[in-house]
Amino acid sequence: MHNGSTGPQEKTPHQLYEHLAQLDSGYTLEACTQYAAWIHEIHELKRRHNAVILAHNYQRPEIFEVADVIGDSLELARQSKQVASDVVVFCGVHFMAETAKIVNPERMVLLPDLQAGCSLAESITGEALADRKEELRQVYPDLQVVCYVNTTADVKAESDVCCTSSNAVQVVEALDTENILFVPDENLARYVQNETSKNIIAWQGNCYVHHQITPEQIQEVRDKLPQVKVLVHPECREDVLALADAVLSTSAMMRYAKESPAQEFLIVTECGLSDRLLLEVPEKKFYKSCKLCAYMKMITLEGVRDSLRDGRFEITLPEETRIGAQRSLDRMLALNA
Ligand code: SF4
Image 1 (cartoon, rainbow, N blue to C red):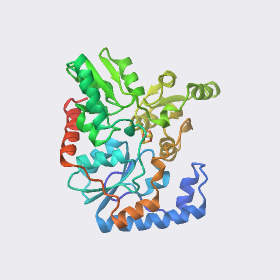
Image 2 (spheres, rainbow, N blue to C red):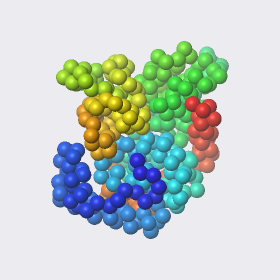
Image 3 (tube, protein in one colour):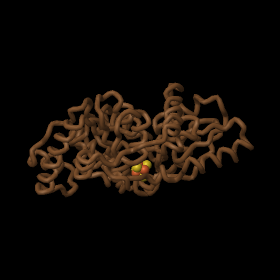
Image 4 (cartoon, rainbow, N blue to C red):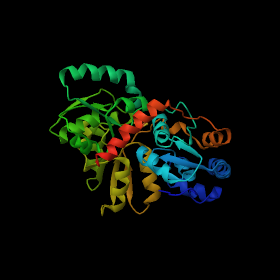
């Protein structure tokens, strides 16, 4: 991860090609020459506009070359507050850029492509959540809503507290209530239910990337390579989680793979994380059982250049929504989960 506002060292086209060719993903010298030119332009524009670039773990590997900070969505939103800048360019999807805006109200937050959505965040709206809450409170007067950070600002504002994939169980345990509506990921909700005696009512949403990974795919690798440690993201189905050596958020997977004495891993999440591990921990082996998130891959270097050059696309939020969403995020921190 790169901390601070200078970002990684700029590479020549040949250096960039040598670096990215390690991934075996079809990078050519011609493409890398174009990337190097865009990267140079982006660095210039970043300085001119006093901007910081945040990139989610699932971004294209060439995007990591311009990122000041790489991480999961909440980590990025939090770290963006530590870096002095007027502009935040978010290389990720829409709800993540909103989260960055929630915690950085005074700064301009840009998302290079407004089409970069998320099947999980789009499975629920603030309005639908308000209706469901009202219905359930007739049966469970103590009901509280825990929302995964992969939600829009509207949904966060309608919830009692936020959580991440790494603290979901602790947040649920820390609440002084027995009945919890957990939104929007049904797989994460089931994972939490298995870890707590509280009553978890799940919203029926899922991440199309993780939901399509099957136990047969994991078992096939386990049979061929019994020595691998299988690291699985909790947005995966229950029968896939059952085959994991460890169920971890993306940032926790990074730490685990770096610190574990094990040498070979199967990374079961979006492919961008395996790419990041392959580049950052070249002495270990990473096998992929991953899927691409089409939304994440909508962000390109050219798009980031245009975003910085033309100040687009700015993320704005009604102040009432922003404050409500901030309250849910703050409560998560206050629970110390
Ligand atoms: S990987 Fe899943 S949760 Fe993440 S942005 Fe893509 S669709 Fe949404």
